[in-house]
Length: 345
Image (tube, rainbow, N blue to C red):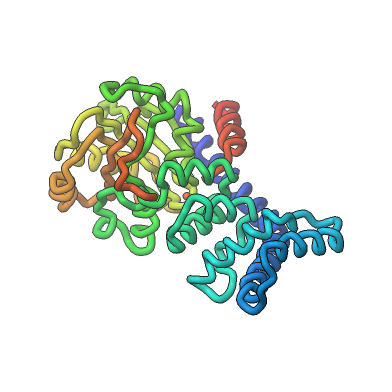
């Protein structure tokens, strides 16, 4: 059984690297085309704004411009009056930050750009979503979901001891990977749900769970058995993170964080590092998910722990609090990876 699991993990690592290489090659080709289009839109937006300042052409100006461009470039879409106004708005939004089109903005499709500026009012936050969209390959509907669930405000907010337990830059990459809180509203459970019920539903909706965790998480198993000194121990959820190159243990707690949780997680991490980790892997990371936590309790509990542990809250039914104003595969990629994993088993 151990050999089967190890082979499965090795295959997942290899297929992820292969998929990443293919995606990079496809992305390079698409990127050059997209960058040219965004550069063109930037020039159009800039010229429109400058001409509006120089001349008093009135509101009919945009209609005429749309008609003239559309008639001349019959094979190019995007010169409708409505889209020209959107180009103008897009240029005005980002030109406050830069004299040229920001690189992250030029790397994503126009539809994604329009969505971002329609939902986000802060340029720095918009640039974060543009960069995250490019790095994670978010489809437009996924981007919209991420904005709705305020991904920006939650990213990198878990309380951790990564700075002392991991070397730089692994510590920073790991910190940015974790969120607080995690939103599990897709489970349809009440707030009183217990740990095993939450775990069962998360495994049953693993694609949604991985989408919420973020890019790079490959699911290994739940109630994963470890044998230490002839004693059996079971991990709630075990993942391997393809970018961080390490195992990630997730333990679910239906109540408030208790300091003893960190000691148990420290033991699990030592066991995984001894039994599963190989020489090419980075130190394993633990994530304790609780219904609630006291930040000071967590900081004290993690202060002298030598294994990297993060603590976050999770939400089951409520919307994210109003004070949250805002490593990802596509659904098809997740489903294909799960089919591969199941076929190996």
